[in-house]
Structures are given as structure tokens and as C-alpha cells.
Amino acid sequence: MEILVQEQKTATITATSGLTMECTTAHHEFDISGAPTMGGDGRGVDPAETLLAALGACALVIAKSFARIKGINLKSISVEITGTFEDYGFEFLQQENKTSKVGFSHIDAKYFVDADNDPDAIEALIKFVEGNCPVRDTLENPPTFATEVIAMTDVVV
Image (cartoon, rainbow, N blue to C red):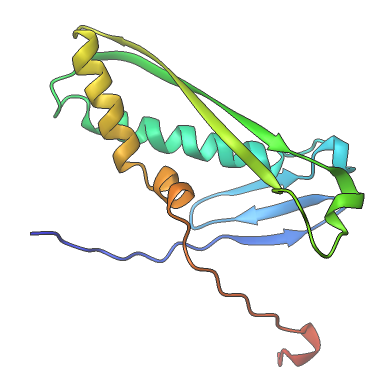
């Protein structure tokens, strides 16, 4: 029997100076900024790198949470996430009808695992991780999107 628990997660992002964005989530505040190639000042991590970091961090949370349950004596684990990013620049972004993808076209993950288990058991853990990582699932099975624009002149204080 599957138990579905739905949880709303919210991030509020406010543009500050230049291309720096102040991000607030339920428990954290941090900056994300446009890449230097887009005119960002490098004060925060760029959005595309943030996505890669979220994917890797999510995978490792699952790995560390389930290693013992799966019989893996995990000593250490890390993952290197590399994405091929299609960046055509501002001229391309201004086109009404884009002919190419904007963003990542391919993502690779390399897991570095130190454990007292045979390679098959470690590979089974990583397969489990990748099949149960919410961030990866979101990328592989995109959610629906809804957008609402609220003009600040319409907001009553």
C-alpha cells in the first residue's frame, strides 16, 4: 500500500543589485546570481550550478539515509555532477522562436563510494538512490507549471 504525503515547498526569490537574487526558503537564506558570462558579479552561485548541486545533494541524502537499511557499510560518498549547458547568449534568448534547447542537454553523475561491500551491492544502492531522488525524478518527469503575474500596483497594503 502506497502512502502519499504531499508537502508544499516554497522559495521566494527577490532581485537585488545587479543580477544577484536573494533566495529565502523555509529554513535558509542564500544568494544566487547570474553567471559572469551573463553579466553577474559572482556573488552567488549561478542558477544552473545550483540545479546541479541540488541534484547531487538530493542523491547523497538518499544514499546516506538508506545505506545501512540496504546493508551497505558506507564510509564515505561523494558525487560529481557535470552538465552540458547550451548557452547561446543574449541574442539567442531574445529570439521569439528558439530553434535549440536553452539549458542542460546532458547530465552525468560520477559517484565516489568507499564501503565494505562488493561492487554489485554498491551499484544496487546507487540504482536505488537514482530511482528515489526527488530532484532527479523532477528533472526526468517534469512537473506542470502555472504562472501568475501580479502587478505591484494591484497589491493592497
